[in-house]
Length: 182
Image (cartoon, rainbow, N blue to C red; front, side):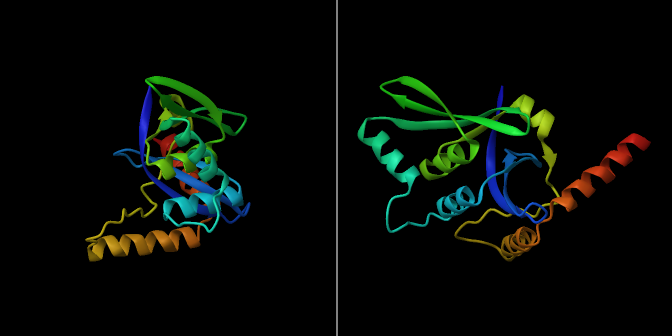
């Protein structure tokens, strides 16, 4: 079984100086952190912000090719994690037939964002790697934003700018102590 992602956010692990994607599971405070490369983070940020580039990037070129061949991207699935490496599939459709291709999660997520298709994460991955991200201020943006929503976005921006993986480790270490002591 799979669960749907409803929010994608990004941060920077200041310890490793690596970008991190947080995929929040729909209607929960559970998130899956995925460390990605700097180039992929740049492409994802451009995609999330719907920014155009003067020339097509690799993902744009591939999507144009798919479109010309009659394929559509249907969904992205994060399907496995082995030895700290996540695995994903991109599911394409043409004439009622599904084609499933192995992909790096970062590329799959970028494709999903660009084509506005859903991202799903396998339940076992959520159970084994999901973290409580309720302490991360995540505010979705819309055209009629309230003061409270603006404040949440501001808090989230500050969180991202000061992101430190040690904070998450401390949060879980302290939580683990509480659970062990009960």
